[in-house]
Image 1 (cartoon, helix red, strand yellow):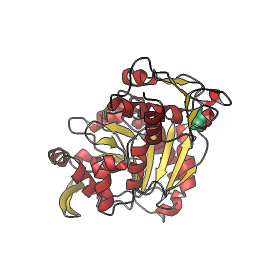
Image 2 (cartoon, rainbow, N blue to C red):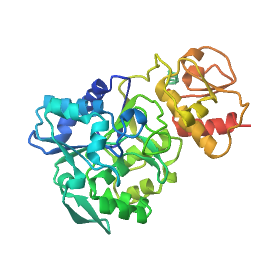
Image 3 (tube, rainbow, N blue to C red):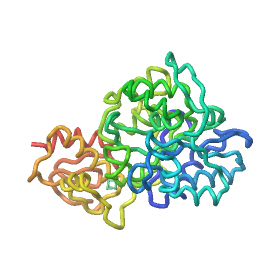
Image 4 (tube, rainbow, N blue to C red):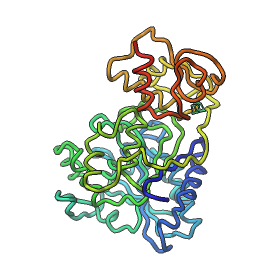
Length: 365
Ligand code: SF4
């Protein structure tokens, strides 16, 4: 897998999907010799199950460990430190990681208990815990979700889990963006496996999950976060730490020249999407008919961007989306399934950033 590639897989068998995406990336070759010390860094920010939209699904952990062990890698540790004020062990239990790690006999290391050293992160003095710093290969396993201060959070910000709590507090006093970008000049990002199953609409602690049933693979954390911006209806220019990380040479924001490999097509849900308050209110502006989760989820993010601009009002004609509209005529539709509509946005699925621009132009009156 090259640095400008993006791997994408859809479905609901998350463990099998994880193994498929790692096979497609040929992770074995990326890691190298079997004696390599490998770390898995999920997002256990708070003590909430993955269905809340805050934390990494345990199935991704199971699939990754199974892939690694099947390929002869034995030196594997799962490591994470929850946010300040949360106990990592509580988060570990809430996410059901204990059963997974017992099954595969893999240790967990709470990074709040780790020692640390100070490094020069492209001109900033930053502390990083010793266990992640000693690894040969780090698999960063963030959740694609919103964040009240940094707009989005994914690969780059997930590395905030590999620093001591005192440093996490200091980052907040520095406005987060700059230290996060600089941290990623020293923290490892050898492979990024993104949990895009049901990340939260706008809070890192979850509560409003947006179901998309998708897992993504990257080698470049900046490309990852730039793609995530667009998947949530933003441009990467909107998020300072993504722009700065590119300037510091961490990676590239060039999503236009990225090579996207879809391992399978988007999947249609056979049951209604579970929705909470804010997501439900946004969904009221859509009229789905057999919509794929990645398409429908992207539309929720696009509608949220329009809501941010005060463009959603009662009485607006709902937007059509889904495979049930194939061959039908209508006014405004999203995705190639609505190509016979008067106004339709091509793509299968289109990105939320393109949906937001299209709807602003063709639907908002
Ligand atoms: S355009 Fe149609 S088939 Fe493609 S993702 Fe959207 S709903 Fe699914």
